[in-house]
Each structure stands twice: as C-alpha cells, then as structure tokens.
Image 1 (spheres, rainbow, N blue to C red):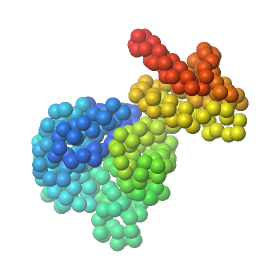
Image 2: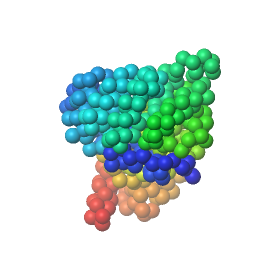
Image 3: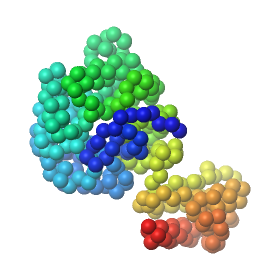
Image 4: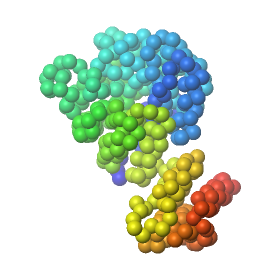
Amino acid sequence: MQRRYSRPVILGNVQVGGGAPVTVQSMTNTDTRDVRATLDQIHRLVREGCEIVRVAVPDLQAARALKEIKAGCPIPLVADIHFDYRLALAALESGADGLRINPGNIGGRERVAAIVNAARGKKVPIRIGVNAGSLEKDLLARYGGPTPRAMVESALRHIRLLEEMGYREIKVSLKASHVPVMIEAYRLLARQVEYPLHVGVTEAGTVRSGTIKSAVGIGALLAEGIGDTIRVSLTGDPVEEVRVGYAILKALGLRQRGIDLISCPTCGRTCIDLERIALEVEERLSWVDKPLKVAVMGCAVNGPGEASHADVGIAGGRGFGLLFRGGRIIGRFPEKDLVDALVREVEKILQEKNSSD
C-alpha cells in the first residue's frame, strides 16, 4: 500500500513521518510522581516493543519527576499537558522529547507562544492533540457537535497558530471514541496538511471491545496510507496496547515483530484440544521479538498445508500431531507433548538466527 507523504519530525532518536516505519506508542498509567513505578512500567512496555511513551503531567511535581524518568527511559518520552502551560515549560526543562497539548484547553496565544519558544530552543516536536470530547465551544455551536469537520477546523486553527510563530515541528492527532467520526476526520485532514499524523481511537474500551474498535479505526486508515504513529487506547495494562498495536501493523504487513500465529477456528473435524494448545503456544512464545510465522492447525484438511507454509507449525491428528519446519515434517508427537516440541523448535530457530546474525 502507498503511504501518504508526511514531513518528518524527530522525537529523541526516533524519526516520525518522512517514510519511516509506523511507530507504536503507549502511555503509562502510573502516578508520574512515582519515578520507580513509572520506569518499571516503561521498561515492561519497551520489552513488548513500545517505541515512544507518553506520561501524564498533572502538576509541577510530576513535571520535575520527568528529569529522573528521562534519565532511565530508553525510548523517546512525551509529556502530556493539559490546562497549565507552565507544566509544558517545566517538562521541557526536565528533558521531555516531545509535548502533547490539547488546543481546546491550553489557553490563549501568549501561553502557546511561550511553549513554542521553549520547544524551539530544544528542537522538541509538539503534538496538537484534538479530541472530540474537548473541542472549542464556538466550533461545537457552529457544527452542531463534535463532527469530523469541527475537529479538522480545530486542528487547522492551531496548526496555523504554530506556523505563524514559525514553528513546524508538528504532529497532529484527531481522536474520537466514535470510529466513523475519527476515520473521516483523519481523511479530511490528511488531504490538507503534510504533518505526521498520530492515529488512534480514544477511550476505545476494554481489551476486548477496545481491540476491535482500534483494529477497525486504525486499520482502516493505515490501509489507506494514513498514519505515522499509532496508540491503541485500552482500559487496563498498557502492555496490551503495544501488543494490539503490533498485531494491527502485522495484519497489514506494515511491521513484523514477534510471532504471527495462524490457528484454525476449529470444526467437527478437529481431533485435538486446539484452543488450549493455541492459547498455550501464544503465551509461551510471547517473549519472541523476531518475526516468525507459527501455525497451529487442528485437522488434516488445511492443517498440513498451512503448517508447512509457516516457519514452524503443528497439525493435529487423533491424539497426536505432526511438527513441521520449513515445509518438512520433522516429527510426530503425542498431543500432550506437542507444545513442548514446538517451543523447542522455535528456540532452535532463534538460536540459529542469532548465530547467523
């Protein structure tokens, strides 16, 4: 798929836009003032592949804590600022690699200018974060609610403001919890600006419902070439946000990280406990960070073919299964030993890859 052109910005050591791979972002849900808890969660996110992390900055103590967090954070750190422009200034002093401000609540032109001047001196990008839940009152009145056009006009209003101040290190997001509104807003803006777009469905819900909303909304835009960074917003452990983000990118062929699990939906021909086996395989191989296609199939109809097309896979029979690698059968195991055999083979493959690298 052809990706929309966007001018690049640099967040720490990560390029966003300009043809760079779509990056996966998340946000901590710890108290930012608790440096140790926040760093512990950041490191968990990094192990899952998170490439940019955002933290809430609700007060001056949190802004000052960013200095110590930044010292222990291996990926770009973005400060999330609302209401008080002075928190943005303090976050920049503490070393934040990026700022996210909501134009609907940050204040007037003079306050925005203070943020821009400080960011300019440190070459820190600013994300204009438009949210359907906090649009300016005049736009809500004009458009009759948080419509896609109202969101885009809000974004353009604040883009123009930063451009008038000579600042173009800009990212933009247009988030809504209603997927059709979010999709249409991004489509409209993508036709009008070349700034990198941060894509997500805000307040998407729990892991189950939020994953579906995010896959539809983010996936639809990425399939059209729209989007430079993504964040899956889920109620719960942010590690799940990163996992779902990569799953969306893998499904579209945009990024390859970790296992691509192929497992059949089961039917009356299935002769092994496929659901249990597939879930166990997914859990036991969750640590894998190299791209690897793994098939877990339940019968002799599509099983051998799918398993043989994967890097490694199993195809079930009645109480036993075949282990495939690179299109060849390399073993036959009782059902109870299938997962262990598959995991051992994956470990062997990764050891060989590491040796060759």
